[in-house]
Image 1 (cartoon, rainbow, N blue to C red):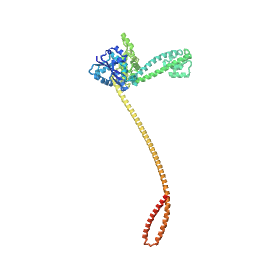
Image 2 (cartoon, rainbow, N blue to C red):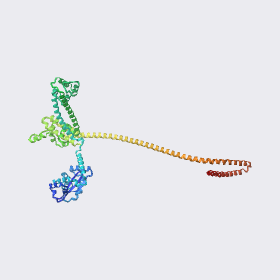
Image 3 (tube, rainbow, N blue to C red):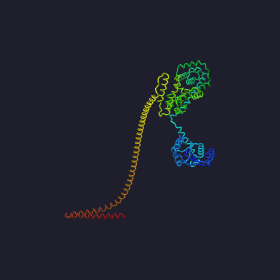
Image 4 (tube, rainbow, N blue to C red):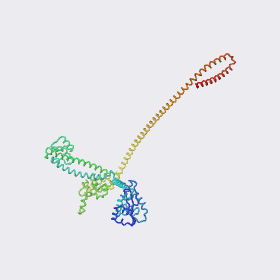
Length: 575
């Protein structure tokens, strides 16, 4: 026998184990079971060859779903290629737990896969001692990974379309049937109990719901007030019947109720009334759900009976997969097996007997009508289960066919062929899809307009915010400029003050100089006056020369004045 490899998948990744060669212990199940008790002995029997961990929980979920569906994921394909490619041409065998996965691996890789009993025992031992085989992975991580993978895998498997939930319909119709039975029992007990006090009311009010309401309104028949008459009128909406009830209360032969008895009767009547109201709410709920889940089946056979067929089949898809002969006898399984066991005639209908079409047909045509109705119900269920569009167009056309067939059994008028009816249904479906597309386009245009308006509003708001921010920035810059100007003015003022202080010092010194210069100028003026008088006495010919001399004298005087002023300045400095 060649080498044996074991492919073991867990929540952390793929592992490939190799069984040690020439080990007779691996051939026996009892020996493997004994070896599994201790890791030392089992570790000699099986050794880890390779381990590929999953990179993310999403990858783990994808591989788990592919294994459950019997397909090979890319991760597993690469893992087998890298580890078993070197074994090509050699005799070896790969042990797997799933037969379908083994078949896929053998088809794609040409590897012989085994699912013998000893393989399962070895896999069980690997699962038991996995934490010792993979020491780098903590045991807590393994447990957390298994829990997370199980939750995500279950969530994927249970994932469903909210509008196609047939389980809600199954539960609702089951509760309706149970409440209907309970209401019949409670109404019977209420009539018997209240009949001891007012026996004539049972013949006057036959409806169970109205009887419970009237019992609540009357309570004690001996006391009749205007309020009770108004309540009876609201309940019954028949003035003659109300008068008959009032007359019957006056001449009733019933016994009187004690206060304790009246409390219990009132409580039972109140409970019956609430149960009827709840029953009505459940029926409206069932009608709404069936209109979304199985609209065609609801149109053909009714919401209540269609829900019963779905509940009997287990789901809408199961009902759609049934042939029409099975749909015809759903609900009559006991009678069918009894007939087969006793070699008698098989039943012609099961739940379909509750349909109005079966009741309208003659006795000789009931079997034929039930077979035809089962055929149309199966078609309607297939439309509802597998059609991507939820519409009742096909159901209405199938209903027309059922009515035409019923007329054919009664009058002999030939009905239309199924091909013609389905063509009409397809044309109506095309028209409906076009209308829906137009409505969707209009809605999209409206949404686009609304989005454009919102975008424009946002742009306007953004512009306003920008303008506000710019104005704030300009104000801040103006404020900063003003502050700079103020600082410059302060500096100018300080400089002016400093310059003024310097000027005042210079002016003081100049005042001293000016006083000395004024004294010298007065003396010079006196001398010049004397010179002018002397020149005026001289002849005019000598005017030019005198003028020149005067100029020279002035220059000399000026120089002398400057020298004198310098000397005076030096004297002042020395002082």
